[in-house]
Image 1: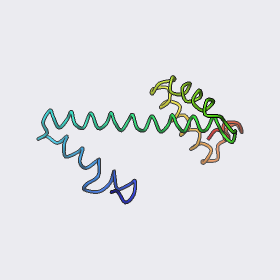
Image 2 (image 1 turned 120 degrees about the vertical axis):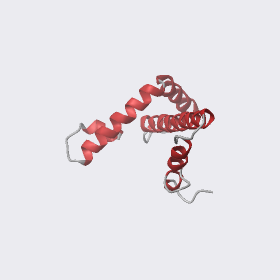
Image 3 (image 1 turned 120 degrees about the horizontal axis):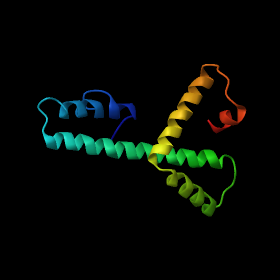
Length: 112
């Protein structure tokens, strides 16, 4: 098991350290392919999580039927990974601007 999320990434047995070891000058093509596949799996997992967050943001406090939730998921997932990750980046930029005291529209604050 993993004690906390950060331990997946940090320390001598973390993902980053293991990937760096596999990508060292002594790495084989198989090692590099393994890291590439792991990166793809990780990117897909992050994207799927962001898509789920987008659905729940759109839902807000509304009571939705399962059908409404499924329809919204279909619309969000149809956007594709690139569009979703671009929205994630914009969300992060807007959130940081808000945290830094810069003005953003009230409706955008509600989305974040």
